[in-house]
Length: 223
Ligand SMILES: [Zn+2]
Image (cartoon, rainbow, N blue to C red; front, top):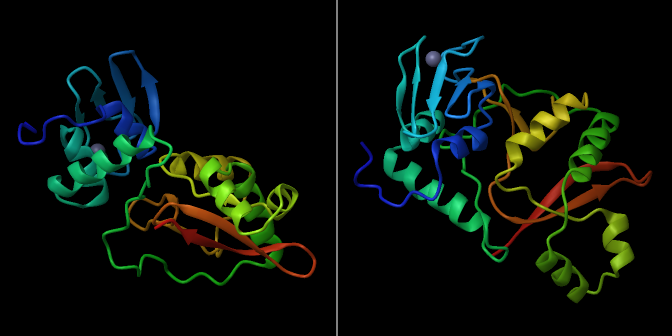
């Protein structure tokens, strides 16, 4: 089916994980998941791990590894191939720049929500940063810029999440964090899922007000 795309660095289970598709049952060879394409509330999406194919018994959507990613992000199979190679090949190597998939659709995704209060932003951003770590190369570059190790910890610099971003959003929601009106998060209006809008790899720099609350996070991208 995907004969022109040899050597995919991932299997379909990896893509299910990457896209944070909810697994209801795992038989070891098959995943029964909530279908992300049709508002499925049960487990109509059947994923065959061995054959690397999926099919929804409710809406009929199906295909291979690339189709799952391509349909989910509304991109071509070519783009899906390139992005999966980039995500999964670079994931293992610490020096690689891992790029998150930039949303294909114009950035009008959000029905504008009013900016969350500084209390809400501080709580959500603090929880977000607590789930992240600082990569060794980013730490070194901060030290080279003259920051001390203590300052780096106190100020809360972290490395942008790469493939774990969907899991982090799930964890934040489970912790009861409010993502509404918090810049950097948006709700995909097609799927109703909250997402973290980070387009590259870099250092996350918390912006604090005079009370020490995190009002915003800036990302200094790697180049
Ligand atoms: Zn479906």
